[in-house]
Length: 508
Image (cartoon, rainbow, N blue to C red; front, top):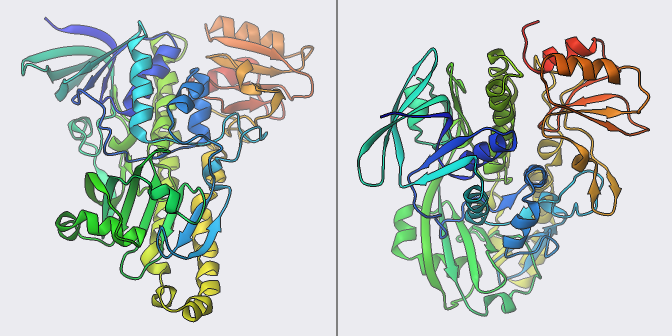
């Protein structure tokens, strides 16, 4: 017997779970298939949840839960320190990193948050466990799929090794870099890999934090000629992460404790909890979809971690794709809406990969100088030059709000010629965001007496488009999409019916 559902999501990492949460937010049921029974806590991967991702979590009512699970409070530090070793000499520092300082700032409804990816994933799993619209099946995996005019049939293996079949109207492949779904629809990665090896270590070292002379920091970059890399805290107890740069796996596996001590700059006692060798990849799928199958997250794009954009780009994918799938399944948008997912999201991923590649071009080995570890006089002689290089070459890696908050879908077939950006944010009062007034569908924001409000309401009713009207003086009449991006303002041409049809993907 074949089970039938509206949406099947292959892959239950953060992006797959976010797809399911978004379509549940829009009232649509899904099943998520995930091979891992438990979250992988000892390989934290991403550690920065961007301000934009936190805004999207706020939209689902999850921002406070994410912050509550974070071991590092958002106000703990927004600094990156560049040093000769964790316990060594400070060269310089960069403040206001990763949007962590945006609390109360009009630019964003939420600041960024330092939190390991597994903790975010657990919040999403816990939320889904309480949703009647999402079923998460761990220990299952999708092994093949066939697509026809009316839907997708997925071949899956359950935890007991038994073959099952699931029939879905649409399938989302959020199954990572080795995506079965990507291969099944004939899409392929395009791009390159960086051959320089990196080696991640998670370790525990009681009392180490008390010895650090540089104060709190989200990153400590070690510009040491023979031990280049970076470290950071995973909690306010004794757990740390580090990345040794230009270190082959063979050398890391042979002496991980020695790697940690090299970055710290002292023979500290430490317990190695996990290791993870890797090489950076810069890959983009040549297409994001077939007719009824879509790719999201790492299945669609891979970029180096420098800059903290990895899984955040995937959460943006999930929201963009999720509301569109729900609109089609609920009958208020045509199937022709769905290709706009690739039109809008693939350029964002390409830009993100390009920025990460620029960040990757200069890492700790390129910034190091042997004199930094020499005498006090040698250090003093070279410090200013290295500090200047750090600020010149690395500032953009930590200050990227143009990419995080200001990316736009301008040029998309769904938006007006001057629209497509995220709705500019501002606070209405203490803790009350403009975004909190927006509905789950489209929102029309503007003066209560604007003559087009009635025609917009009528046109939305005609097409069964969910439209929430928010009367706010001082705003231009603005049509806002479910993902908080602007579809149209009254500075642009178009009747309400034309604007709504365009915004929901009807052919012109």
